[in-house]
Image 1 (cartoon, helix red, strand yellow):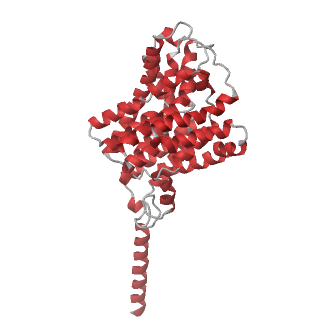
Image 2 (tube, one colour):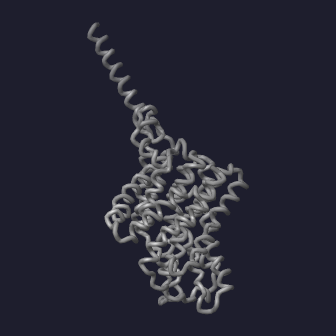
Length: 390
């Protein structure tokens, strides 16, 4: 009798332990939302590997989405939204805006502003493309988002992931995951989204316009550019200082010629490490329980609209600007798309679309002007939004 009781107690104990173990598995905490997000993560990884769409961004983000959507029992301190978990600590760099300035430091250290310096009027194209930011901001207000949320959503139109993260972390932290994933998604889809818009707003004759080769830029001009750039931009929008300051500082490290080691570190190992951290944590922040909302879906829709407006704004501005330029000095409107700051992908799109109509017309060197101007322009636009919404 005692043996039977002991045996029964033992089996009850084993059963309770098995039940408890099952409660701690992902299967017990699984929802269809988690499955959907895992499929989205796998799609990101597939696009990066098969199509080679921004693999340095989409693979960390896609894998991060998978990590963030493996269900777990609450209280284990492993989730990105659980205080003091490893992912939560790494995510502080996103929520508090630490990572984006470091990304901008690396971008500055690897960017050659010669195309912009040699033809300063290309800066206007970069400014015109920011129309997507303010267009999406207005639409977001009309559909019911608060001004701060609308500002965070609108910045997606700048096609600059770090700027979008920095702005959203200040204006609408609750929307940070959706804004960041949307911004990086559309950056990766530049070769898909932009060409139809470019063809729609240009004529065959305009696509064949040949531009004069850019002039040679001196070392002195390259050194003075970041110092003049930070004074001009940050005196107008001091709230953009964390991004613009690091961008121009990184560029000075590159162009000074005496800080090669620092420039190499900023543009190589450092930006690679920060890219991994920002991509992985942004992806992991898309937990189905917090991410799959009507607002997130709306943000993706508005992000697409802002990106289209930005592309169209750059192209249409060039067409308008050409009305005031003499024959021989006109700008090919196909480089207008490069005003968004997806460097260098949008400039490559200008080249690819241009060569569809004239194999000997090389637009890449010209498109890099508005492309790097777009990096500056999106940071300035972010500063403007922060100055009256934060």
